Image 1 (tube, rainbow, N blue to C red):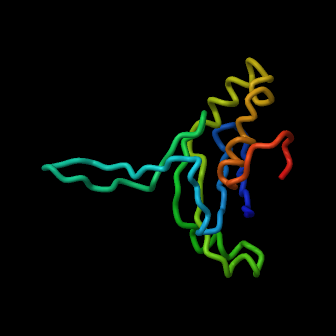
Image 2: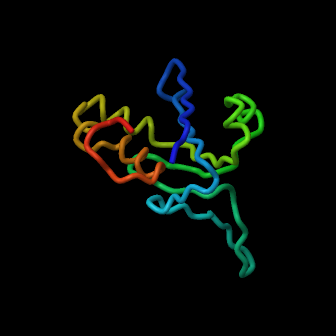
Length: 128
């Protein structure tokens, strides 16, 4: 399995974002996405995209917008993709790292997220 990572960086941690583009047939069984619902008059109504928490990170799953597909290399544009985005939690991780820089190394937080999205077993090291 393979995936692309699109990162957005700005002048502050508030501007950092990650979106993972995965083939649509990818199974994300290690991360439990759930559809948020609003209840009213005995019925449930879906509210927004599927979401999940993974350590510090709130993730959402969605379709990939066409304007992003057009930025991919030609042979990737023919594939069907799903998007998993980190929408919250990066600031919490950065705050903790400013206090204890060993957190990332000891817990392999980002590596565990990448491994879970890619559907690979955890291995020592940081390369795929």
